[in-house]
Image (tube, rainbow, N blue to C red; front, side):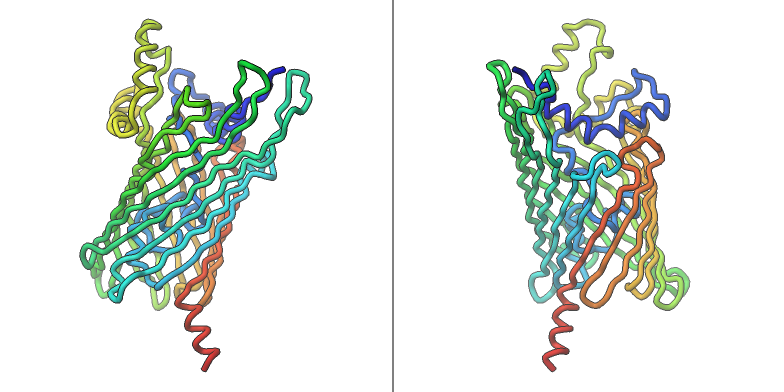
Length: 402
């Protein structure tokens, strides 16, 4: 008796449906549609409402408790001594109701000069309950696959205007199930380690009589080991990503500011060979063997020049995010943005909208995703983030004691 539903196929349906839907909506030709495939794809999902509301933007925005995902070196410039944030995202809610992403993130400034910070993040992605069936659709077993990541970061100012940060991460992707026959060994849980390296620069130029803020940053994330779900027979690359961003904030009037930002993202993962790109099967087998045995570091450098379509296709692998944030007295926020992904690489393009309200102690943010393709399962995705400011909490407790 064999399992009719493979868990790998389940992941493909749950997490890669969007490229399929986008390609259908935009009438993409088969020989042009060529997305970059990775393992543990949930690591690329934005956890917080602020960044997602601005179209997946965050490399150079003002630091907050969720900077670990976007650019952890920003923590060294954080205004508060410490903060803690909790985020929740119901995922693919147009299809199912039990898949979600939960994220806990925070930081703590160190030393008297506030020049360095420690940070940590715990994220948990649940794929809900999955029933495994045989050829006759009889239930054999029920599993609860999930993906988990825990990381620790350190950031430090190297000058009055520039900082760098490093993050160490442990990743567990438990998609395991028990095999039911001799030739079906099932799936195993996969684990990996990775590192992030980032930098952040901020300046305060004068435009007229107004002091503005210009910042730029970069984040190279998920540089680490490969993962395998089939007892080491096949390996997948982590979603190693290069993020570059810039942000410009200027005052509109007393207590009113407006910021505009742009992020560029590129997966530094080699493109898997396709049979149709080779003249003979032997050439394809040789290329596939090189891809399967390629080290993650070699793959990073290879990813900038291995697309079958040449430089044009390499440019198609760059995702663009643009966004804006209006703030009144740093208490009320309105945000919007747009994320663009080329249709040949998945077409996961969408608009983001959001708002936030902050008191001395707590800030609540929410965002809403509106996909450009109506058939996209990511359409109408909601995110909620609750942030606790430790400086505000300390001040509040101090006033109560007095």
